[in-house]
Length: 127
Image 1 (cartoon, rainbow, N blue to C red):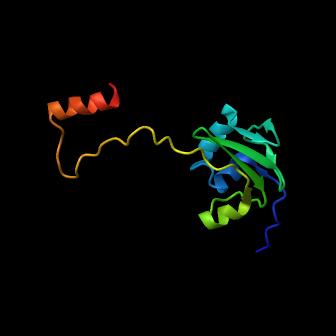
Image 2: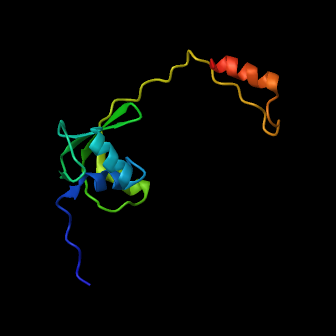
Image 3: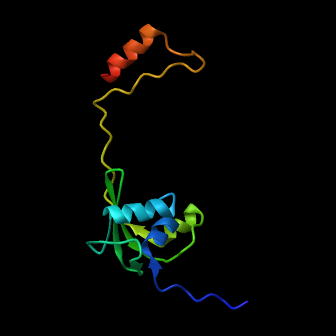
């Protein structure tokens, strides 16, 4: 069996999927189409070719990750291999807003809340 030649370029959606930025290739395609992904400062379509050295800005859940392409892959592998595909230059994620108290948790096995408990829960949540 002949040896496979090393990749020179890979489709953006495939690379985002292989680098584990998105769980499925379809989600990566949707993000590119929606304009949440920029390559070298420009919005990119899913079929854009990615090369080592390209800088990719990916907006995920309101937080922008800045990734520099180091390696190419068109197959999804383990997370340890995926981390070798990019250099992460993202700023740290924004701190969690701790001014809001955590929602109270019911004890496991306590059953359904009563009507009175449900009303208290709704009041806490602001419904």
